Image (cartoon, rainbow, N blue to C red):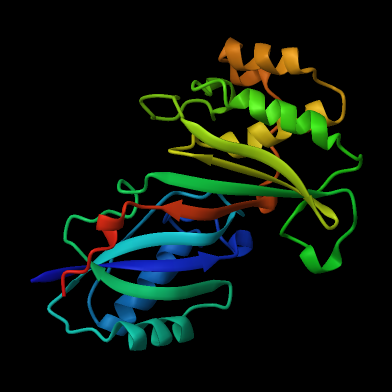
Length: 253
């Protein structure tokens, strides 16, 4: 008999070619699977709540796995797993859930943040993207609010992916200044591949006076990725919150 477990974790994506396992490339998924399989002495496959790209970070991430015929002390397993893993991956908690609970499909909302600064920040290297101008925060927030009027984000989607729809329901989009950094926070029921990085790049065009609000509206309505701004580098991007309905976390033992 198998028991399904959720794993709550975080990782710095700098040393990985994204979350998802790829042949002969280091990924977060493969690293955790190898450690779990060694500890539990059985093949373990895990399913993540999303597929972050190369260099993207996650401060809040969930995965699930099925374990056969073991009475697991999850506190001890969490401790041992952290001792097996490199320091850029942290396991917060492992806990049993219902057999049909799914880390990816049960998620009802995800929140991302993109960090930028016009300053050289030696203790934040690899965790923000450097820009060389001071953006207009007010204009960027007007642009962020404009995004909320739309549902089709084809203009910000990576081309030639296999998604069935480019419809996303945004519930939050806002810029804030915190210390030496500007942080863009965006929440939606789902995101398209590369969407947050391309949205951020386009909003920064507004912030530097290169693009008007009417111009942004035109880009969105064109539904053409070539019309939007450049995609920002991956290292400034964090998946920072994944939300589930309460019943997803109902334990079965």
